Image (tube, rainbow, N blue to C red):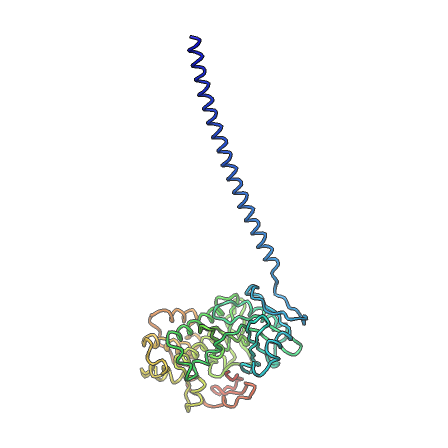
Length: 418
């Protein structure tokens, strides 16, 4: 009995030890797994904290919008900086970039100053707009407005890189677009053939989106007041960007319209309420967009028709042909009928809706973009403004680009189109 009991006890002891060993293995395994999990969590957390710390350091180290008054040395545009920052260029940098404002670098001259092409020492091409002393804008006002414009970020707006402020002059520095302005294509008998209907349609939509951003999608409501073919620039891929914000007016809060005693703009693009009463609103830009749309479709300048016809404008000519059911006769011949007829006719109708005389009758830019992208039934346009003219004062503009123009017997100041 003792031998049997001893054997059973030994058997039980071995079983207990085996169970104990198994438990130890499980405990050790669980501990190792727990340590691995904790280590992994700690490592990932430390890595994330490191990234956050690095990002915070980068954020805090970014330069803010600063104005370096007459700082020595060239302060040139740095492509690594954030989009909304405005760079201040000293005069030496601008002079060097433009070959001391050489006539060979001059791209044009308008009522608000000369425009030059330049190249910074880092190879970046720029456009410098030297604003006229007659602009009547103080340095602080200019600085604040330039800062605001620099914050406008949209693919269909030319980017303002910076500015230069001296005792004598104020200058704006923009990005350079290789294909220059839209008017150099649609009004050129050779180049206009490079713009088929599909490309013209894309340009029209791009311009509309840029205006919509200014009117409704930016932080403030902005009225451009000088929309025209020469103020739409094209990049290497013929992508349109609105430029020249020298006449913009900014609406704050719930402001919807404004007025001015000094009506300044470009002949043929000004809405009737602006030209005659100095009233401007988003619908003023809509009117200008309508004229520009008709110019893109016809390949003709609105001002050209003022000079050629005895008493009719481009808008008036399009309206008359539209009423007669002959709107297709006005389409640019260089398109060679390689366009969808219904689509082009609807775009002509949209253009006529934009140039209606009554402000309330004109659509908003949001509605225009909807109409451009849909085949919905369009309202019939009412008779547009400025169908006829009574004078030819536009040919008497001074060399500075400014002159007197009688529109419906009201005298205003106009800028000669570049």
